[in-house]
Length: 159
Image (cartoon, rainbow, N blue to C red; front, side):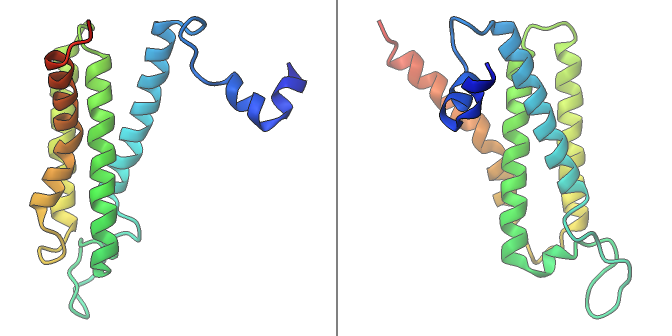
């Protein structure tokens, strides 16, 4: 086993998903762990943006606003990418827990987390640096894509 894992190609292939070998329940659990970690990291990054927040109201900035937002293009890319990652991971979590016990409670917690995230980024982002309609559009992309894929599969059902 150690010799097989010592070369890059065989090491990589050893850990790839194989339909006959890997159990669906194990795969679901791994995907839930990964999606939860991504959701946690992206939520935290949105609530506490890189560079922190201003502590005072000097030199034209306002206390509590993201320092990183002073570089508006970079902050905009960060905010859109972070929001996209958060919403995609939330979609995976909701999809993989469908029909689980307490699924309704998971939905409520998830919606509450999304509202909290939106409130936090709204609070730390200066009004002039980001157009929030683009952030909302980024948050909806994974859900829209999933719906389009489902619709495509229904319309062009493989026989």
